[in-house]
Length: 221
Image (tube, one colour):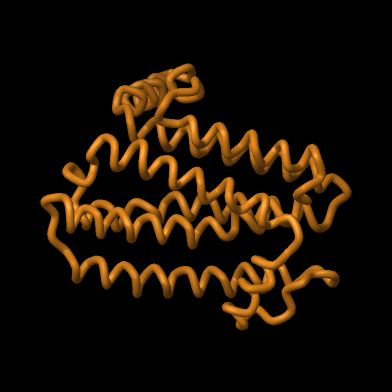
């Protein structure tokens, strides 16, 4: 089962490339640990944009209907991101030398992050990861004919919950300890494991069955 999850394939190649690229940026000093953290924090917006694109694609080129659901998702997800952003910015502003000073200045704070030195190298890795999966997976395999707008609407939330939890935990190690670079490396590796696992479960139901069987056997023991 683990080979099915972690072995590089055409389905997860962009996940592998993105993680390797971020680790390379850390190694050559083009991106600091805090920049890697901010890049993952911005991923919430990127996920939302690609979810909107997938929903719209399913409506236009697929058999799904749901412009009202698309509008609802944009409003709901926007509100979700705003609340999450305020919480995240409040957390980032705890550190005295942080560039984030006022948590409620959402647009201004995102502008500050976008203009940080090194973010121009790290953020494209996150964006290209999702773009690559969108083209090679969603478009190439014509999943817009399989998934309805309603199904696509709920897909991002679980991933974002896990993602932000990891970002928050990593924040304390990167900012308040002397092992920031180690924490950033662990953040990239842990995100790699999570993304590969989620991708494997999504693409191959046999992996989900195998995982369920292992859990069932442990309970029996």
